[in-house]
Length: 240
Length: 327
Image (cartoon, rainbow over all chains, first blue to last red; front, top):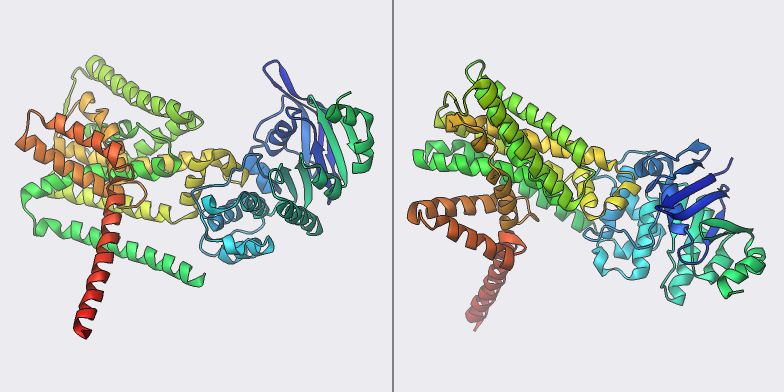
C-alpha cells in the first residue's frame, strides 16, 4: 500500500493551470523530493494534499483512503502533517505553546490534558535539540530554529507522512547539515517525508527519489542521479 | 523549568482568588452601598458583562463582532414578550438560549468571512433584526414600544451579579484552556491552526454562540430595569460599539482589562453627563480618540508599567533605609 497516491490531480486558478493531471506516489518510509522552477505548482500540490485547497479533478489517497475532499484538520488527524514555505508559526506564543497546541489537537491516538501535555512536549523538543528554546517567544528564535520548530510542531500531531515545504532555504551551511540530519532521523523513526526543496545538495543527499515538476506537470521521476542526468531536467534548469 | 510552571499555576490560583473576592464583594455590596450607587453598578455590570463576553471571542480570534446589540436585543424582547407569564429567572435563561441559537446561525453563515467582511455582516444582522422587529411591531402588533413590568433594583442587581460572575468564570476558564489557546492560534494564523488538527469553524461557532448566552441573558434582565423598550432601544448600535471601545480602552491582554475599561468609561460618562450635559459627548469622543492614539495597549499596559515602577521605587527605598541604618 502506498502512503500517498495522487491520480490525475488538477487545479486551475482562473485560466492558469497550476497542477495539470499530476500522478504521484510516495511509498512508506521513503524520502521523496519535489523539485521544479518557481511557479511550477509545487506548493499548490502540497496545498491540495494537505486540504488547504480542493482539486477540481483527480483523487488523492492517503494510506489507501480518499482524502481529496477532507478538511485540513481531518487530514492532519489521519497522520499527515506539513510545514509552510513562509513559516506559519504562532509568533505570539512561546515555542512550547506552539508544540503543545499541535499535540493536543492534532494527535488522534492519545488525548492529552492541557496541563499534562508538558512532558510529552519536552520530549519532542529534546529530540529535535530545541529544549533550550522552549520558553522563548518565537520572535526571539533564529530562522533555522523557527523552521525546526515548525517541523517539531508537525511531528507533535503524530504524523506518519510529513510534507516539508522548503525548510532548508536560507540556512547557513552548518544549519543545513543539521536540518538534513533531522530529516534522515525522521525516516529512521519510520516517518515518510515528501519535501519541496531548492537546495540541490540536500535533495541529492537525502532523497531516495525525486519528482520534477514543470508548468504543473510531472516531467521526470527517479533516483537523484538519474534525474540529475535527465536531459529535460537539465534543459529546465540550465536552458536549452 | 519546573519553577516556571509552578509559578504559572500560582499565578492562575492568585487570579482565581481575585475573581472569588470580586464576586463576594459584588454580591454583598447592596448591604453597604447606597441605592444610587447600586443603580450605577447595574449599568457597569451590564456593560462589563457585554464587554467581557465580546472579548472572550473577539479578543483571541481578532474577529471584531458588531453583533452584540442584536444578541442583547433578543434577550430584551424575550423579556418584553414573556414577562408576567413566568418567573424572571426562567425568562433570563430563555433569553440566553435564544441568543445562543441566533449566534449559532450567524456563526454558521459568517465565520468563513474574514476581517472587514465579518464586521460588516455582524453589523448588518443587527440592523436587519432591528428593522424586522420594528416592522413586526408596527404592522402586526400595532405598537412601536412595549411596557414591561419592572423588577426591583435589588433583584436586577443580583441577577446581573450572577450573570457577570458566570461570564467572568467562563472567561477565566477559557483563557487557561486548550480551547482558548486554539482560539488564539486561529486569530494568529487560521491556516496553521487548521493544519495542526483544529476544527476551526466548529470551535469559532461554539465559542461565539457560547458567549452570546451572557449577552442575551443581560438583555433579558435589563429590560425589566428599563420598563419600556422599542426596537431602537433594544437594538441600539451603540450597544455593539461600546463593548469594543471599552475592551480596547481597558486592554484585552489581561482578563481584568475589559472590566477596568468598562468601569472607567461608565464612571467618566456618568460624571460628564451630570457635570457637562451639553458637551459630554464631545469630551467623551475626544477621550476615546486619545486612548486609541496614545494608549494602544490600553489601561492595563499603563497600570502594569506603573506597578512595575512602584515596585522598583519600593526596593530602592528599602535599600536606602538599610544603608541609612548601617551608616
